[in-house]
Length: 299
Image 1 (cartoon, rainbow, N blue to C red):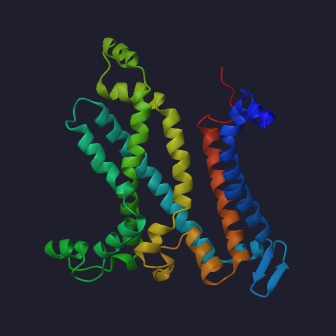
Image 2 (cartoon, rainbow, N blue to C red; image 1 turned 90 degrees about the vertical axis):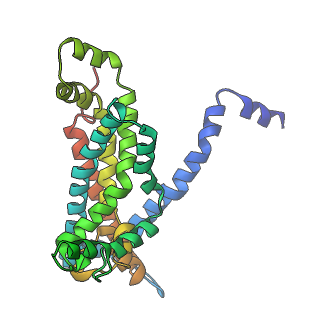
Image 3 (cartoon, helix red, strand yellow; image 1 turned 135 degrees about the horizontal axis):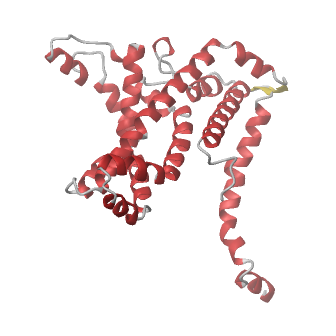
């Protein structure tokens, strides 16, 4: 008993004891599922048994036109969310950090509250908002403008626009807080030196704020790439299920759910998940190398 007490109270063992819960949860809820998914992607899993099929599932994916549509939709969504959810939150963060905005706490809360809302609730609200019936909020606005009613969620452009609106509504405040934390880490002496040199507000933003916000920008970019490719619940709730007209709202994860869960093809669904993981890793590794985070030694 004394040996165990001495072990747990020792300074050498204490760090390992504190990180042990994280290591155990990481192994159980990340490494084990990942290894199981890789194994299942090479199998044909049926209620009656499991059959090893090698790379057959991946060969089917290469010829699966619906899967290609899902990749295209997810990639479009990811690119457009990066265009919207990096510069605008950065702009709002700069505003919140300046003296131009009053009641900053109120505006921060207003922008962050949507992130606390359940995606089920927000997705349902936006589905009602973009309803094709005359009572839908968007159709009420277009009717008042004399434009008539539209079937918003049955058209490619407006359906994607609805998804982007949900994403911006939910995540603008979160990304803004990331950038605010990055701004707080910038030494005010840099701006004072810029003022002495006669720099304008735009020059300070371009040559001081943006370069020094690079670590935060890289972080937001990295998580946004994966979040864009792995989007599922927003599309699921907006179209009230994994199916959408002409698959305009089908995503990679939505297709995984459709094949793996709805059609009980777990092996094929696992192959879809592995492809998603590879695509997300490849894009993030490339962007980390391009922006200099990987592959360059620090001086």
